[in-house]
Image (cartoon, rainbow, N blue to C red; front, side, top):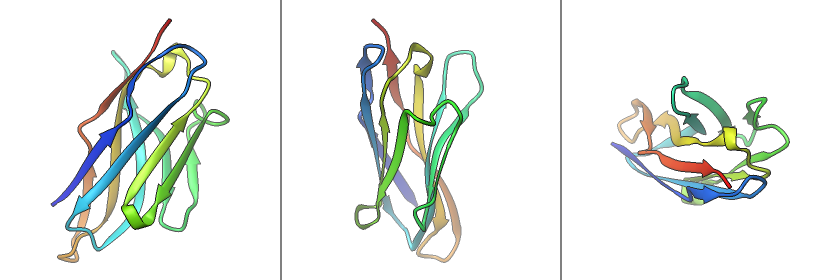
Length: 120
């Protein structure tokens, strides 16, 4: 079992910043990738950002230039720094990770979600 604990969501004014954190724990042999998704009310889930084991990152078009994803491998933690936030960034943000468990089985784990609200 792999558990993810997210933190850092909240209410922020347009143009403000937030930093989300997600710590993975449990039966982890190797983490291949960690990422962030979001789901806004009435919309489909959207991939926001991914960071791979070698450090390569991928950002959605809406995140480019404003969001940065980073990772602390020693802590199995991924961060999403969100700057210049817009009302359309309002959503529940979910952490996701995939890799190999200590039983040498692939896993795909999700966090519980953290609410980000951008409003004046």
